[in-house]
Length: 74
Length: 345
Image (cartoon, rainbow over all chains, first blue to last red; front, top):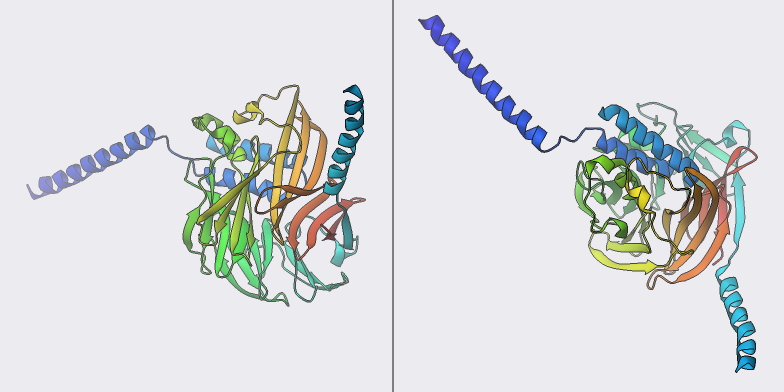
């Protein structure tokens, strides 16, 4: 009887854990989660201006930032 | 009536020519450092500053080092190598500042600012909490450019204390071509690119100037107090008739056969109520730039009136302006050189 009570506690805990994580999944889907690489993209683009001598190189650098971002995002 | 018009025409032409000539100015090269010798070899110069004795400090991201040269351009000392430990720098070091006492070197990928004395001894590091661009300093406050809100493409200026803690932030302006448009996550990279800003700090006036790298139909420069309080905005026309190219708003962009692009690469305080803009006009054929013109524009701080314009080499990378001098890097015969020009405007 004591053992069953222990199992019941585990079941309640698992049920609550599933419920809470489910709420988080639904919530994050509805607000379109932001990938962590967004900060990288912003910095990368500003970095391109700081480290490239002219707009032609800058443009290539920007394309490379976008390519990496797309690659990481997918 | 016809005679009057005939007489008026040459006068108008002369007035027009005189006005344009008055806008033209000439840069005078004062010093050039760079050769194949190890102590004079540079890769990607990102920072150049001068101290009050005329010594020159150069930060190089490609070489992960900072060097000191005397006023004649003779090598004195170098510190740094690639790494994350003490005395080491990443290959993404950027702006270098001198505040009259210390040197501050931004090291993005090590998430820190190295504080050095004039003998290039590293005194301490200021830890940064994320990837941020640019660096400016007024009194005990640092300024860096970061994202306004995670997942949104717009930038703001963050203010830090000497411990690296964010004190506050400012700048919620948008380029005119974004007005009335709804941001779509699909076009995120394009909007991030088009929201880029550049800034400059005037220590004497305790003021920050911010402008968009990709300007819209006009160049807008916004001024803030050192605490981030909005002061005023000036506007100026482009050197050419320019309308922001709509296709750039989408990602990936679908390039038309021909298009123009204007970039404000950097902004600098010149002193005496003048602002210098590093200004590029590029003509594209599909995705390739077929013609690039690089100008230095000197603008009146109060009115936004264009005081001087100068067409300069596309190989000149403007890094900083201080006390009537322009510091930059130039590639000549495949050798990167640190150059100092006298701004005689």
